[in-house]
Length: 511
Image (tube, rainbow, N blue to C red):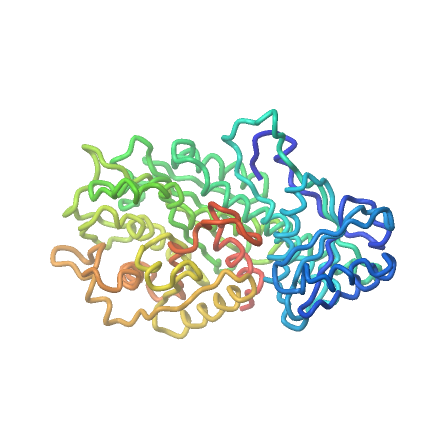
């Protein structure tokens, strides 16, 4: 988690403790279910406090609806000076997503008060195992507290607020062990998502392709992940011509970054491919000024892939997982590719470039063709590919597309299951062979834009050409790569969408 000073940059410590009534931190967090029902831990605490919490509920300040908050001062009745009540909704309907949201909201509220520590019993009385709720609470807390403040000057009149620790409190020793396992998983996944958010939030002048490669190499080395970086010379020698074509207009050269977890395993890898356009001006097909504002985020798919491979390593997932990042800047200049150019992708397919602002699919063409050369178990690509997906799905889900065959259908079923578990939601759009006609070229094998209709599907129809007969799913995250407000565990700015989903997919994978 980046910040303006070293102390602020330290992640919050999460522990698992014992009796919540004896907790000596700054606040206790207690769940309230719909219709003013306290959780079991809340009822026990209320007895110790002589009915103070019940009085607050009867006052109408909080009725248990989702995301409601009420702060209660206890005036020395227990060591913790305050209790934060937070609504969870109907008890039987509390989900992992609800706990992530509640944890994020509660911890951020306490940080806003300038507090340094909190004890949580949000897991009391909710459905799910100790491991699953511990994971959700850890993810929600760390992601909800995320800030990107690397470039903000400290204000001596307003020192930064930092919540240093959270303890999940439970008197049951068996439950505590489950919570410990869950929080360890949640912390690892949250750290990976924070890496993805940080990379996507970086200003484009601070993260050109070569710098991205250096940062990823350092992260990989720390995580014990194999990392290979191909620069312009190697890309040229090996035929990665579409990545080179996209990057040829920029003073910052492109790169292909390959991460590999469990590289020594003799098995077909699960391969993740990320679009890594570090800045997208549109090239000679120039975007409007407003259209460029968020284009530092055009490498959000790559950031998710990087985070997922690092998470796989930290969690010790017993599977070979490969991440491929196609990194380039798309800039206009005298050396930029032109509408009408024809370029030959890795593997030999020729592409007519009719719009240089459809550059993401070009770098993915090389990366997907390379992924196929690894004889993968399955391939999933993640990309901020089309504005059309926002028209279709808004900002609530990413578009998912894949080939119309049994292996790709089975892969998409797995992706759907991972999406349900993480609440990084996907919605499948059709990719019938009929759509192939839209990207046929008169002068090359394929063209990089369709007729203008069904733009998300046309983008996937283009990518389909490069995955052969392998199981493949394409995730278009153009509507979900960032949040426009802070709520729950979502923080304004890059969302890290895809990191948790891809990590869950690898965790759940069985042959």
